[in-house]
Length: 132
Image (cartoon, rainbow, N blue to C red; front, side, top):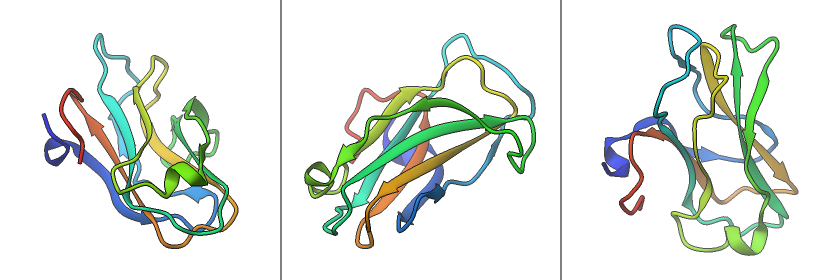
């Protein structure tokens, strides 16, 4: 399964401040799969700004407005030097962990000022093929 076959939560997200950027996924119920899907967060357009790092995290909640969000996983802080690579740089690639409630979203934490790059967020069944 390629990137084009994924459930695209968001594409072309311009990350300018720390915020929740992805759409909210409604799973219709809290559940854990025997073999869960992959969450992939990657750059679409390279970052070449004065920001120092970017971190992606997956949050879950039992309400659509995330009044009490729980963080399921936090990716590593990807440094600016890495963000300046070509599009397709993976910020986070992880199976959706056990403990997901009804709603899922992705939060991007920006350290510094980033304005030129964009990020895509997708849920994929398999990731054994190139994502770009």
